[in-house]
Length: 498
Image 1 (cartoon, one colour):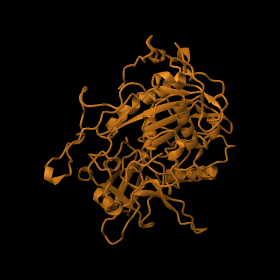
Image 2 (spheres, rainbow, N blue to C red):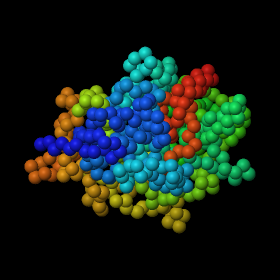
Image 3 (cartoon, helix red, strand yellow):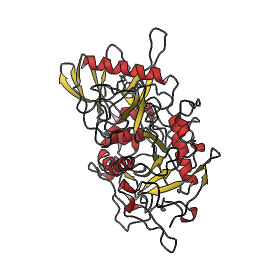
Image 4 (cartoon, rainbow, N blue to C red):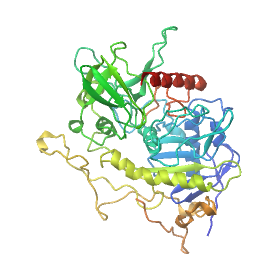
């Protein structure tokens, strides 16, 4: 039984039809209004074109009957006419959910433009297909396998350069909800410092001072999806920088509200004596990169207490902060498309199914990300002991979080589509996509047959980055071509040093 609905977009006089297929929300865009936000003809660059797309995709889903019960969104398109300069992965925050982590509420947040009282993060993950280069069809932006390395491109692949894996890129963009705007104070008379983060934009010729960005410095032993590297102290002032498998570091988890301050290990951060007080802004190495050695750098071991000295204590702090989130995967079709092409549906399902177990592992079992549209949401959190409360005498082991039993407590309402909203439940995927068995249907009584589960932050103000595109940025800044060329220069410079 089909109940199609033609629903008015909130911000434009067009019609969009919304369907749900195996927990993927599919939005039709016959007039190209949503995809048009990414076009070069869109001269409105604040908020960025990528945030405009993500917002319109989410608002269209809401207008189509999807309930307001998601903490975050990953948005994709089937559009294969985007260039690498427009297909920029991006994780713009929607609302702030914590203080004293460098993400305090700010008037530049676009919260009121979203059809939601809950959504906190809206990540743009680009096309599920190929980008368009100046010589024709380009590379596949996201690798088909979530655990394969992403290869940066500037219209054509850059030989020998890889970075994070596909799922790590997703984590990077969602991670911008909490990360990384911190400073620290080592109580050494220097005051607040930011060289734990990358530093870019300086130009001695024109006097431009530069500023820290929202990623770890390449000289930080972060081992994190938020950049930085994996650093080995070789002794005598020599250090080896390499790529590795990445997760959310202990300091990341503290900032995310998943770990107490007393539980977080220090992070080794190097300071270049030639540029004191400044981090290094270089794209993160892939785990198979050859690496490089630096000499004569000063080692600092940054602790959470030193971050707290500069920023204040996170509020709410672990274990009182949120530890479970529910996210939606949304695909916007192009033109006359009525279904997600089979290969693209296979890819987005691979990413959706990988996300929940990967996130749990990457947070040492402390965080949960649900990806189901239908069925139960996150359980109501039950209080647990504060591991940093000396009076309690309790210290939880790594991964020690409250795990509710099946019948414990209440759960959030079904985040799925209202039955009376008339959302079409059995369309949006080609017959040969191999996933039609999981399409949600309506029973004769009008109820939803629920399939089995497969089981905030303000706009970044200082986010200059020379990261190669496609990649994240906090705003869709003008001069994207220049940024791309700068990124290429940085990469080539690193290749020469390695």
